[in-house]
Length: 77
Image 1 (tube, rainbow, N blue to C red):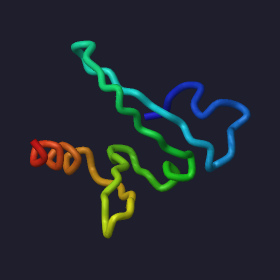
Image 2: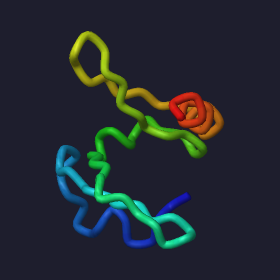
Image 3: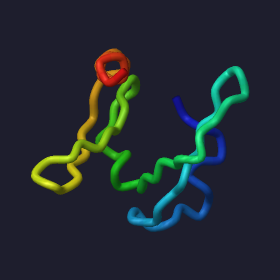
């Protein structure tokens, strides 16, 4: 999926951070945001989700399938 007009033109540097807030279909939302950089998206495939794990007190990003992401969320509840 591509978002029309994203990234903006001219394209910002690979390490410029974007911030995203989500809204659910029932208009509920969270005040927690997600940040990402264009460099982090370069290796992502359609149908994947970028997540952050905490490993040895540090953040490690990895890409998982949408199904795995849903399973992780279900297991966390």
